[in-house]
Image 1 (cartoon, rainbow, N blue to C red):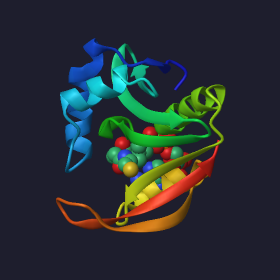
Image 2: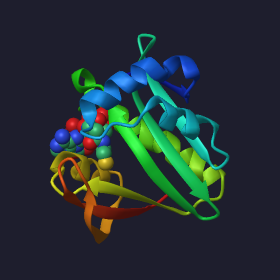
Image 3: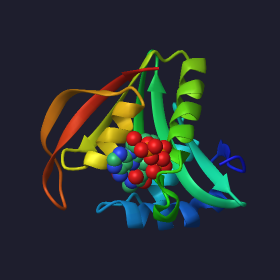
Length: 147
Ligand SMILES: CC(C)(COP(=O)(O)OP(=O)(O)OC[C@H]1O[C@@H](n2cnc3c(N)ncnc32)[C@H](O)[C@@H]1OP(=O)(O)O)[C@@H](O)C(=O)NCCC(=O)NCCS
């Protein structure tokens, strides 16, 4: 995907981001949640653009050595083309620049596809949070990766 570019999320990206969010998650983030991330002090959000359109995004928090990947999704029509991998690498680059050494994230226990993606990105399951998610109720796998 040579035409893919990654840049900071802007307010004008939010409708496209929300559309991807709604088809990707049973408990999608709201517009306000993305705005909070965009303007958060220890946070950043990036979008991937393909042919000028938002096709994926990633949101992360950081504090001292530790980071949290909070949200990542790619438009269903463009999955399995390496877009999330590019977003994760870009986030890792930014987080390392800010002094982070490792990152945590949570994933639904049944989401084998996302878990595979995270394992390929260097994350490993470190603990389970029982009944962390609702709609439907489900455990969260907490994963950690070195940046
Ligand atoms: C998880 C997600 C972000 C992956 O995005 P993507 O752009 O398709 O991922 P990539 O193309 O970079 O995948 C890289 C590798 O991860 C693994 N992988 C990615 N998605 C996978 C899936 N659904 N099943 C199995 N392995 C998968 C594969 O090894 C893949 O390499 P390959 O395509 O050469 O086999 C995307 O499926 C998505 O948006 N899902 C819905 C939202 C979501 O679940 N987010 C994570 C919540 S915790």
